[in-house]
Image (cartoon, rainbow, N blue to C red):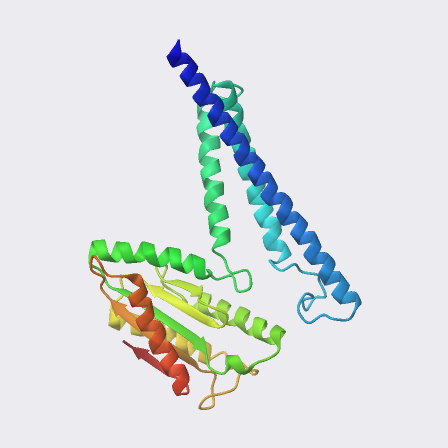
Length: 285
């Protein structure tokens, strides 16, 4: 009898925990929608006052801070997540995985929930301005690639780079348009499926190059450099008569006990040194 009571209590506790998860997710969506409405109201007010510097795009559409399309997509993913959680909660509450569903349907619901979580994770790693991975996504990816390279004794390349003269631009809309355009060029120039490009910071990018020696990295970074140079961005100050970038590149085969921070630091310091010297250089360290 005591075992039955224990099992019953555990089932009840699981149901309560699952219900709390659903309530938390509902709260997240409510807050997200509330913030979206507030941001849109602020944008509308600015529009009425004639202040269209940041919240109204070139099509005169009102946008929220995250981007309305991104928010709608996020809410859709979260709603799917909630729907699948509800199925699982109902079956936990009854203690019967067959209640209202077959075993296969329950498993499908569980796997769908896992897929939803992955979608949400992917969304959190996306930079909404450029469509590239954001810094959080980069930090997650480099750990994965670093561990893989350590295990396989393979070489990993990292390039950190930025547009020369970008920091001199003061118009926010011009800056954002350039970042979007350059990001699309970077995605188009990235021919290897294993390479990973992210927005490193406001106006800096990072390219992670798995299983890439120095010769291979040189080919990839030259492709990036020539692609950006070929854009000939009118608003950017020219260096040697062209649109230029500064780039620091580190190629390394990690060993057990090595730290990613040292690897990143080498590439970043090389990049900053080039920027301070005038730019338009790609250097390997």
